Length: 131
Image (cartoon, rainbow, N blue to C red):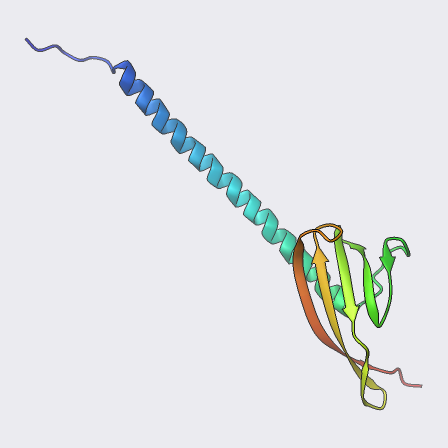
């Protein structure tokens, strides 16, 4: 004699709940990972933009010491845009009278000597102002 089945067994219900729980957990984990990746990429883009602006301007509009120290040529250190920045400018080499060249390296850290977010190097050509 055959019995008619009109409901799910407890094992089937528990198995389907387990599969749904694993699926939702994986989906939530992927969403959180995507949010973390976007935060990191935004931080790196901001750090690189900060490094590029500091490469050409060793004296940003910041309060004087202790937040920012200026040494040109030499190493300039300080905080800007919530990043710790080290800018190193080499000695200037004179190409022609009134025109000099100097190499500049900028490192941008998450915090004081924390994780390195961006590095930028540039050769600056400077000319003396006309008298």
